[in-house]
Structures are given as C-alpha cells and as structure tokens.
Image 1 (cartoon, rainbow, N blue to C red):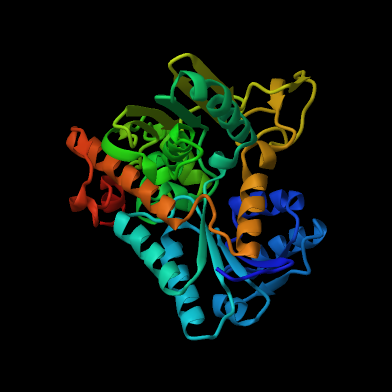
Image 2: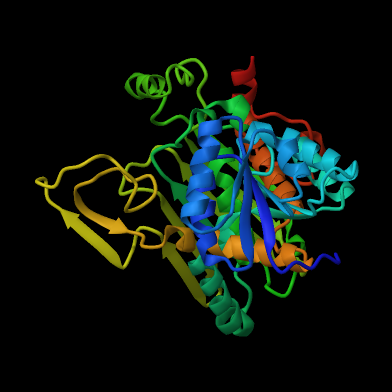
Length: 414
C-alpha cells in the first residue's frame, strides 16, 4: 500500500453513543482530522460536528448523504459506526464510489461486530478487498491499556521461560444498551452474545496469541454456547423497555438473550490445546460497565477488573442531581461509594485503537485488526449461537453456518 499522508482526514458514518466515544478518544491521536459526519438525522449530525469542533478535531462538515461525503474529496478514510443492520449497505456504497472513481477514499474502519452473519461479514471483507481499501476492525478491548501492558509483560517475562498461556477468561457486563436497535434481534443480529461476546472472544484470542505470530496461528477447533433470558423478559422490566423506547422494543413477544456463556477450544501451531471461557450480560446491576480479564499459564497469571479503580468518590444521600454517566459508562447510581474511570477512552482502548488505525492508514500499513479478524469473530459468534440452539458443541470448520441466522434474529424478523 503506497499511500502516505501527513494528516489522515476521516469521515464518520453514524452519530450514536459510540461515535461520541470515538470522537473523545481522538484528542489523544496525532495526525488526524475529523473531516465529515454523515447520518440520516440532521440534528444528530450537527451534534457530532459541534463536538468535533469543540474538541478541535475539525474543521468538520455535516453531510446530508453518504455519497456527498464520499465524493467531496474531504475524506481519506471512513469510520463505520452506524447500527449493525446498516453496515453492509454502507460498505457497498463505499465500494461503488471508489471502484467507479467517484471517491478518493482509500481506507475503511468498522465497529464491532463486523456483521450479523458469516456471509455478511465475508461480503464486507470482499468489498473492501475488491475496492483496494486498507481495512481495520475496531475492536477496542484488544487495545485496552491494561491488555497492551499485561500481554507484553506476560509474554516477555513469563511465557518466554515457562511456556505459553493456555487459558483466557473474559467477562463483560452492564445493565443494558443505550439505543432501541441493540434490543431488536433482526437489526442487531442477536442479543448480548452478538453485542458483547465479540469483545470477549477477540480479546481472549489476542491474549493467547504469540506476539510474534499472526492471530490466524490459532485455529478454532470447537465452540459451546449457552444463552438465557434472566432479567429483561420479566414483566416489570419488559414494560420498562417498552416505556423507555416508545414500544419499539417488545421483550414479551420478541426477546433477545440478556446472558451468554461461551467456551472456545483452540489449537496453536504446535498442537497445544488452548481455551477461552467468556460470559456476557445485560443483567448486571453494579457501579457500571464491568470488564474482567484473566490470562493463565503454567507458572503465571494476570487479571484486570475495570471497576477496581484507583480513584473512588463517596456521595451521601444529601447529594442529589440528575442521572448521568460522568463517573463510569452505564453508571447505575449517583450516590454511595463509586469507582471513577478518569480516562474511559484510554482504559477501554479507544485512544490506542484509533491511534493505531490512523497511523496504519496514513502510512499504508496493514492494521493488526482487519476485516479478516472481524470475519473470524463472527464465525465464532455464529457457532456459539448454533450451539446454544441445538444444545451441542459445534466443531470447526463449520461450513454449514455460512448463512445461519441466530434464533432471536429470525424470531424478530418474522
């Protein structure tokens, strides 16, 4: 890839919660300009444009259509941050504009998960490759500062002398997503397994991978998954969702799972068996979003809990105010003893993720997370959904899952 740019001009597609997270992380990224924003609603575009200007990331322009942004000449790379069900159509538009010489965009990055099904993910990859686009898969937990530092220490000091790690555990849980489409199986592609297990399996696979070898050096041999509805199908909470989203979410008749468990068996190039254990939940009520990671080897271990922060504050019942998320993402209380993440964008990995993508795109290098990794993640997720549906372990390769649609996505679209 011969592209060399002093400053990478990016165009953002999507203006939801995650777009704001990415924007705030960009203040820690050099050589980047947020040049444009596209989404369907003008007021949402203006909100993101205003934030970009406030953060001194612009000048940033609001575009009323994706083609306008692609053809403007303002954007070198596109960040796809829109809802899951829109991403393939957006990728097709980018592909067409580039291959028809209507756009000089040369790179694209896409939020997790890459797609809702294996065939969709494979098409995302094909379109990017066919258009000659550099591509990056935005999996922030791989770039979490504790993950970067922890993996470096473990592999340099422990694995090098006593043997590779063999077990990674990951858990991510909070009290539920921000927008209605996350709760709609057909739009999101599933429930919490699709929404959050994508993080857990990929950060685990990353931790287990020798830093001197590609992620593909580990082969998935089998997966076993379980899904459940623990909280949000209860009448009281289903009604809360209906009230919150104006009837757009119907968890009585069209629920998606709010708990998922996964076991993934892998094999390295020397035939060693490795294991991933992961759980995800939308049914956790605590201080806020909780990420727990562990890596175990023959003579060592590492662990991280995002809520075990160095900074905590206490507020008595006399301290009152509006609900917010100013202390930690998915904050569930405004009183009591609460952890504070003083740099969420950094700790969660968004800053290093975007710094890495910008530098790779700017210099014409291949990112460490590409659409190929996004496809591999979707393959694991779909295998887990199939396993949960049939109550059996699914062996890999599983070519029959190419067009498989998770049960909750089928129910929601019927």
